[in-house]
Amino acid sequence: MDIEKEKNDWSDEELEAAVEGYLKMLAIEKSDQKLNKAHENRLLREGVLMNRSRVSIEYRMRNISTVLHDLCLPYIVGYLPAKHLGAGVTQRVRAAMIAKGAFDPDDYAPTANDQTLNTKVQKLEQREFIGIPRGIDKPQRLNGTISTFFRDPLVKTWVLKEANGVCEGCGQDAPFKQANGSHFLELHHVKHLADLGSDRPSNAVALCPNCHRRCHYSSDRDEFTASLYTKVKRLKPE
Ligand SMILES: [Zn+2]
Ligand SMILES: [Zn+2]
Image: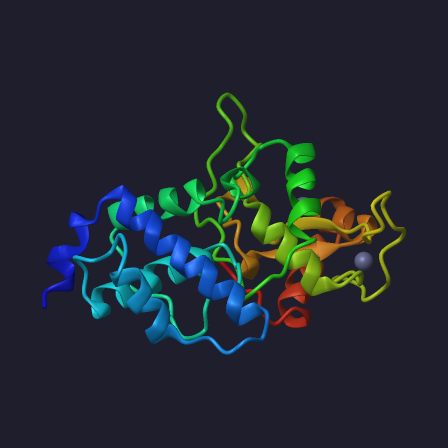
């Protein structure tokens, strides 16, 4: 059967039924009950998805895993994220997931506002985090500014989690905790965004305010910046 060809034929109703089935299975898996995928697949084919094959439903489930994987959300282990998803399909699967309340798209929208970014990060910090966010290769500049960029809340959340309250520049504990109890560290882009650096985990570090200022203003900023690449293994020079 030609799955690729069939892809566009799914109606919104069918996509939403698939999402509903997926979320049910995810809940079963999370609760440590035994998940019988074949059984759930059959149930779907007895309902809205009566015109779909077992294989094509499974492929759709993998599409859903892809969207969750890209948001670093837990996905069903038995449905590996499908690669080579067309942008159009991704958008439609995403829309069906939003319609079914799988996630709030607002939490993940890049923002150029520091305060909004921090609010998003504080919310994302509360949830389970799977994998490493992809981030943004070429962050967009806020119109009319030279140094304000739209940044990915997932990247900041992940880097802060990774640092776990310890400055990645000097190895010291964060200087204080914030009102919500999380450690205060700042996100620094090793190749600055203004120099067309990416907003990706491989270009971002969590620093204490001293180390952060040191990167921007000190006489040894180039040496200090170079030392970050040695200290933080995930960093890649851009
Ligand atoms: Zn430091
Ligand atoms: Zn900085």
